[in-house]
Image 1 (tube, one colour):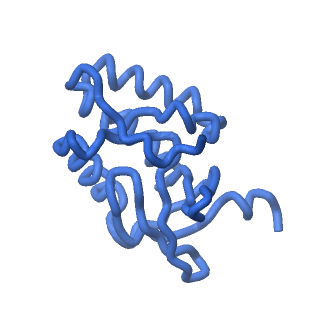
Image 2 (cartoon, one colour):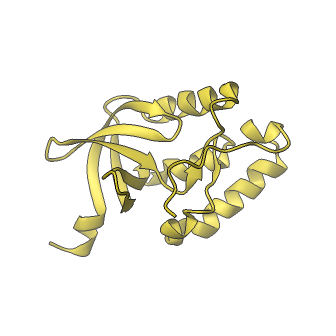
Length: 147
């Protein structure tokens, strides 16, 4: 088995848990929960932005959508964190580009291959005041980042 096979998972989206977590079924039939790596969404106290992030993710990943997961790490609770791709585009990056999420700087090094793209996408979304950048200082959840 090659290293690429160990990192990439071919799957189908089953549903969205919240604005940064999805359920998938891999090509072997196993189901899993995947947390979108290297991004964060507003705290639940900022309901409109959390709900908007979830709705955007549901629109990008309707049930049955084929996805590729680039696993970047698993935590102590055996949750998978990864970059989710649809049609060769990072869903994680699109969430940041469109102002539905911000870069999680505590875990950004796990997305080393796309780190610069994430930072540029956030700067552009902030400059254009897209989505959650309509407020001055979005408070993030930051509950699932590795220490």
